[in-house]
Image (cartoon, rainbow, N blue to C red; front, top):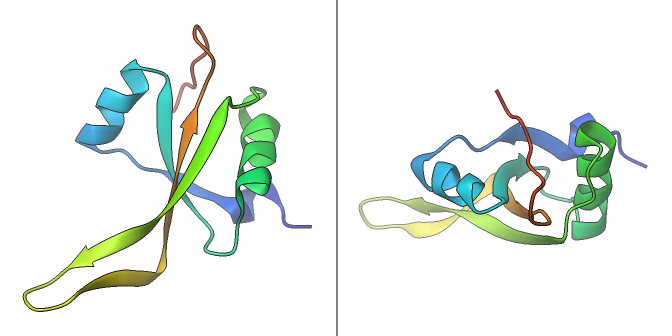
Length: 89
């Protein structure tokens, strides 16, 4: 069993993340081998809120001639119930 600090690496503070936070969705950098259930349990442990839905995507790289995925990159979008929010700052 992984510790929640090994699953949730950091929040993704971006312009898109700010727009998502207004609608109750938050983006996090997560461990590559973490699954949705582990991410949901880590959110509950850290923020005391059960997420409504968790989606996971690989982090894409954009280069001059190469398009692919980074080895250490995985991001999770955590959707909360209406009225709930996470204070990241």
